[in-house]
Image (cartoon, rainbow, N blue to C red; front, side, top):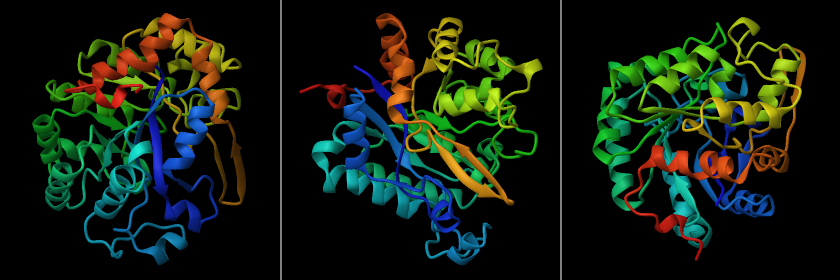
Length: 324
């Protein structure tokens, strides 16, 4: 069985309104393409921009509070869960839904709504993408501590977007690891291979409650070969031949055999946008992402594509993983 640990469902108005791509994906599209590529199950969560932000400001490329929804992600989480459990239950049973949250804004209202949703629609983890919404992930240790308490109560992990870019003040991989070290009873997965930062990857290996995923792997390798700033600089970078993404994945799996979890980041295995007059095109496909993991031995495929994720999730039962 191959499980994809990192997939978005829904729509991102910020990306759509500003002409960026991708900006949407529904459950039938994900499952149909994923099946064609040989994927069996999917961890899913909503896109990042949410209706707590004012739509007019998003259209101007800015974030401002005052949107039509008072609670961050309340609409987006419910919309996704209803798509999974009510609109397409046959497809939805092949997913493991996570809910997304803002670690800093209106935490009490978010937590109250998440408790209500969990009673109606089971979910299996908590997702954070703090960079795009400019919300400090370190708030989990202060005003957002209730999210940690919720994770402990429900026995679910966090999956958190990570960054190493100096200008990113909100979701540094090192900051996420500080949160994890301070809360050893909570499980964390850092997305995007910690942008290939060797020190952060080694720290993931040291902490018993942390894992990392390799989502959007191919365009991160391309970022290295093109000298782009969203990956670790050479002096901190995990050593590998980044001209060959499959070889990089194999090297990561060898170095961190119990910590690496495979994920594609669909539809964000590609990113195409015009920013400040500069056109950026980083393009991959679902099939190419899957080809990287299929290049591994069967034993390693099973570890990164199933076993390590199950260690993170600690499912109470495996009914959603049944192939029947």
